[in-house]
Image 1 (tube, rainbow over the protein chains, first blue to last red):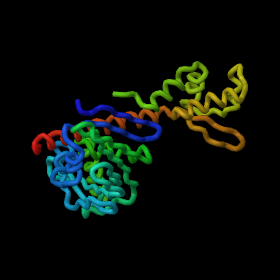
Image 2: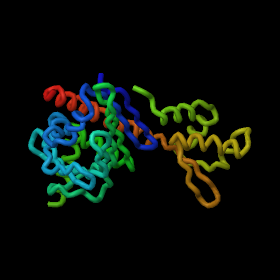
Image 3: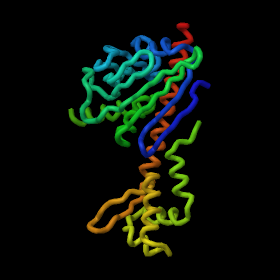
Image 4: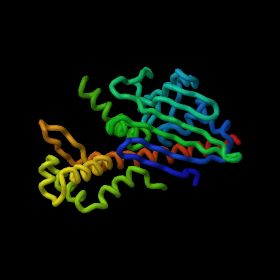
Length: 163
Length: 107
């Protein structure tokens, strides 16, 4: 069991997860830093992520998409606000259009990830701060197969209604 | 898994009979603090304090309407937040498993 603790604060709209990995911080840091490693775990199993851009430095941006079983794509972006290898990482995490440009109608989520050495293991803490229930709902959907199917379906509906 | 601070606040808020009664009364329709105060054998300030505990637990919200403070139940929003955070927990549990796989294959 590597997930040590999960805290869900319904009022503050924060989510905190603490996990421990059997590798030193410098190694765990790489699963975020290296886009080829990142894309192996960011998306749900049937919606693997592909990172087209990954500027892992303060002010840098990442653009990615997740591809569903039928080929549909859901796009997202990161914007790094703090990168302190191999200890701390802060970024905004939001939705993007097909060109990888941030969708401006919804605020991004702010994520803070810290890495602490515990002997030769690493304790990683992820904190996500949401600003509204709607935003939380969209982010939860974006991480789940079922949710992604729904999210993409809704976009299709909107596009279909327009044409 | 550890129960968070917010759950503590909710349990604390609901541990009192007067507060449970206030919550039951405002779930469907808002009520002013002064109307609530008339229902209980205690001071206006004491009722106000109970409302504040419920508010800190996120179970009610207060809205100013003229000179009145109207109290509304927020149970729906809280339940929705709880459900969504539970979904998000599953997302991250999957991701942690994914990271473990990546680490295992390359070390």
